[in-house]
Image (cartoon, rainbow, N blue to C red; front, side, top):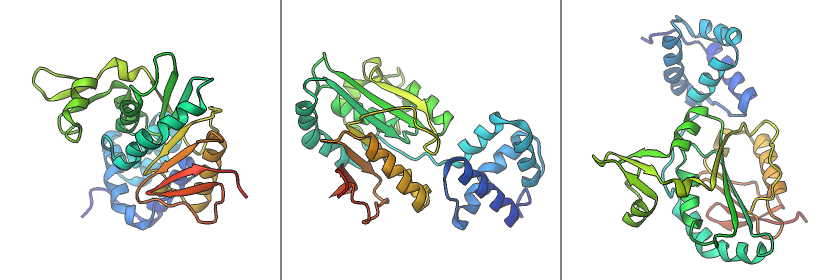
Length: 274
């Protein structure tokens, strides 16, 4: 027997609120996940039912609503996850970007849905020594969840989180605690990354152009209409000559889209629609 009553109406109400706020679709298979995560918020606020919690959400304003969204969003990531994307960046794109941007000496990369920071730090490690010191190289890292953004900006990870990194990366880019349990990203790597909270369904303040956009394992939460709108937005912000989009291994782009060329392995090049 569950600690708190959880009706079909409660689940539908929650699903509607999440979709309206950030476009995430919560199917029936997410019901147990929703219960377990929001039960913590019910306890934390001294409430007795999901119905009470939903009423509380309406009364208390932005602070609890931020906790509500943070509880629902899933943040699973690792350093150099889907390694072929970083290999393609290193061997197939950096020289092209250098050639195309040789006059502006400007590079912009967006990690959309950066979670706890492993993705933007992996991007930064990949490109750190590839551009001369007089180039302006920046990685924008955004996420809906303010809690994970705080962790990402701190750049401190336990020893388990860095298991997949080779020794050269650990020595060059991390400071290890005296007991070996914590690894902190060095300031030199942090300097090129800007962490900002962003709801992808709200207006985007940045103008681009971006040389690369990583939006991986984010699109799986959205319906087709929302995905199409996001793809259009990414297309508009990508550099016209070499802009590339990377999505997650379980995500797909509709074959109906003619404004991206599918390079395989969830990598896409921006092109002008026919």
